[in-house]
Length: 167
Image: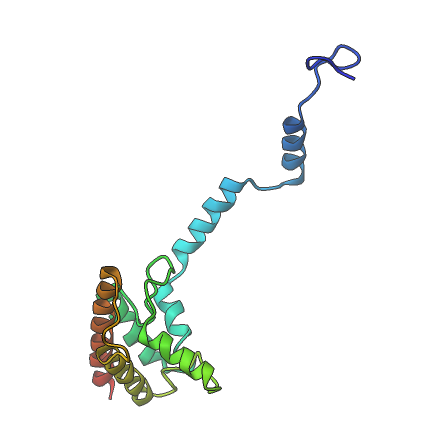
């Protein structure tokens, strides 16, 4: 039993946190901040434009992938509304197509672009049409969503131009 931090034999009691830190260091446990830093470094290495493409063009040819990546780099946005840090900025038309496929039981929700250049053109034209002709035109959208949709439209147009050059 100790009084005022003095143990039974008159020695100071080692605090709980000191023992816990010693055990953590011995076991090789990594601290919270080190884990956060490591995760941030890993996120910097992830190409979110490529990740976005993989979620809609799983079976698309390599030239479609290159057109997607070039358009995304030029516009600073991709067809899924995924920002540079992997966060979604808004619901893009290709995401809506994925959701419709899933709800209708159509397989291949990660295969919106299909397996040919022509199928990618068709899917992109449909996304552009849907963007220009919303089902509820009177819906109120924030300024930020409107900005992202302008980028999305520019991406689809440039992507179509690049795909058209492949045909």
